[in-house]
Amino acid sequence: MIGVLQARKGVRLQGTPINMVLAGIGNPYIIFQLSNYAAQVGTKTFRIKRIQGLNEAGADSIIHICAGVVDWLPPLLTLNGMPFDFVEDELPEVEWAVDMQCWTAVANVTIQVEVEEIG
Amino acid sequence: MADLYPHKSGIGLMEPVALIGQNVCIFYGSVKNWRRVTYLEAIPPFQALDIGAVAAQTVSTKTQCTRLEMQKNEFGQFRWFPMDNAEFKFWLPHVDGRFTLKNLQVPVDMNITDIDPCLHLTEFFVWEDHSPWFDATNFMDYPMTQTRIKAMGFRYVTSALEKETVIKIEAGAEPCTYVVASGNAGNPK
Image: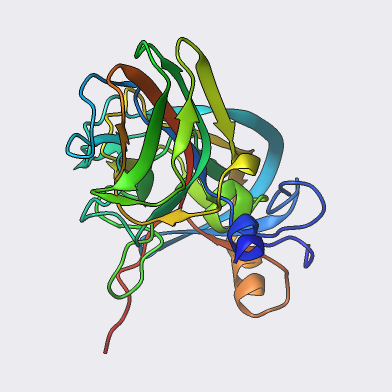
């Protein structure tokens, strides 16, 4: 599927920077909202192009890119006091059709994503 | 002249639909405007319209695009693309939706520059000051602060054709390029 997905060009968009001030699986934050307006023509999906952020948790923290309680990517390790930057080539080519969420194991990790939305 | 026609996509982005001295017939509503091109110049890409801020999951008001109006006795040939991530619908004149199917008025979004780089399927014609209208659908869950389109094309100054020439054209004895400068409600009978 990777070749098929790469062959489709979309519009590059970004979520707003989110500081995850609460930790745990019960506190997922929406980091990108899918375009799903009833008046739009067709449906949209998107793929992650980049995940950037800063760990200010005071400890290393694992972040989970998810929809609800289900991880859609393997958990990502972020190091205490360090920025992190995962780009497309380092991430699975997952196509999203719902809002993208994230939760952190330790509070106070800021995250922002860039995506390419198609449709 | 047989090599020039609307929506043409040749080498390069865009070609004029007629040259100086050639005959054109510009349909506006049910009126046929028989004209001869007397002057032609290019209009480089420019920002033709900014509808402005559009809230998340909202359709803007239909907005007149006066920058694409032409002078009297002139018509314009334009292609266009959105600069911002919205779906733009297009009317010309105000009541006639363009790019219409039975159940859908087809919008243009930012993908057009990838799918149709020459923009030939966005081409339309403006007769005199009958300006087009656009609206923008912000389908995102994020607000937009501007919703812009860029347009480019050609400006044609024309003069009226003599009656004898029109008769020859209608008899097929003289060439003419036909362009439409308004929508059409169809003839569903």
